[in-house]
Structure formats: C-alpha cells, structure tokens
Image 1 (cartoon, one colour):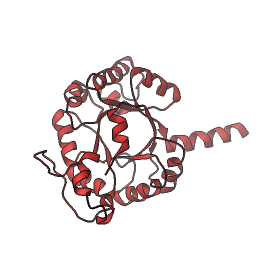
Image 2 (cartoon, rainbow, N blue to C red):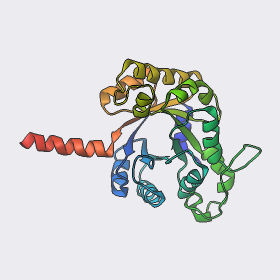
Image 3 (tube, one colour):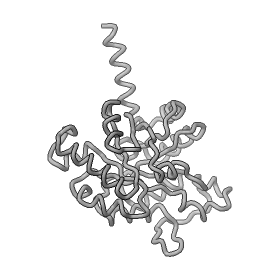
Image 4 (cartoon, one colour):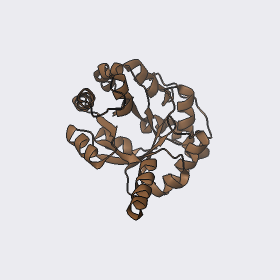
Length: 253
C-alpha cells in the first residue's frame, strides 16, 4: 500500500491543491480532473459526514489528485472512520501541542512494534479494498500521512516540538484561526500574523518537514511559496464558484 503524496511531502516537493467545502462528489470529481496535486475534503467546517466523504473519495478515484481529508476533530473514533473509508492522508485541526500531534499520528496507525498505534482493526473496509488487499494491515501504517494544523498561539509556541516528531509529515497553517488566536480576528494580513506564518515555514524547514497553507489569491500563494511553503491550497470550490458567477453577472449589468 503506497502513498506517493506522502513521499512528495517528505521530499518537500511543491504541491498545489484546492479546498472542497461544498461536500459535493460532483465538484470533487470535476476538480480532481483539473490538474491539482491534492484536494482537501473538509469535514470540520463543511457539512460532509462519513458517507459524503466516501462519495467524494469514490468520485476522485478516477483522477490523479490525492485526497487529503480534514477530520472534524482530533479524535481517534473519527480518525478510524476516515481511514476505513479510504483516506490515507489526514489533516488534523487544533493541534496545540506535541501530545496532540502524537495522538493524531497514533490514531492513524495500527498497533505495531510498540508504535503506540490506536487504530482499531477491521478486516473488510474500503481502505483495504474490502479485504482484497492481503498486505493492507502490514502496509497501511507506512502509507498513513499525518498533517497537523498550526492555528493558535499555543500551537505556534509548540511548533518546533511538533515538527520534531517523526510521525508528523507536515505542518499546515490555518490563517483564520491563527489570526483570531493572536488577537487579530479577520485580519490575516496583520504583521503579527504574517510573522507567525513565516515562523512556521522556518520551523518546518529546520526539521525537514513540509509546510502547508490555504491561500485565497494567487498573490498570496506566491508569497507563501517564497516563504518556503510547499503544500499550497489555491482556494475553495465555493470561492471559485461565486467569483466566476459574480464576475459574469457584473460584466453584464
């Protein structure tokens, strides 16, 4: 069981993606054919439940874009369901300490060789092609890719300790929540927030880890790339839909 996206993160190659907030399998399928390296299936701030996630994973399976699933919270039962549904790479919100990051990584992994894994074992799941992958249980841990969000002042203080964990594959900044936590709600462009964003990229690079972030414009994306970010989401399906619709309407009125 392989995960080429994990390899790309470990090698700190630049990968571009998009954010799926509509919880729509059709939107996921369409964007999966658009050339992105990854698409983020959101179950924290989007209404998707487990079956919605399964449908989106199925829709994306015919294209090359890698599915990254953001779980609702850092909770082993939710992680187990996401992994059994077929997700290999998970994004964890609100990881504020090394202990939080350790829990996230453990929840993604079966107990093996004293690794502290917490994932429950089921023989027939979509993740293991319904039992048709005979080596799934022995290879799933290596394919598991753990991306944790740095989106609070506490997480910022613990970023180096989190990045040092070998089970963590990437740090991903949440600019909106980080702004709020730093006292600048709704103002990700504030100098304090931008300094924190630059700091996370530096910490990740110092530990040879990828740094990820969501950009809302190509100008932002280029700036983040210059700071050292290599996992860059270029926007959201809702944003693209509404921008195109409003631009077309504005051009005619």
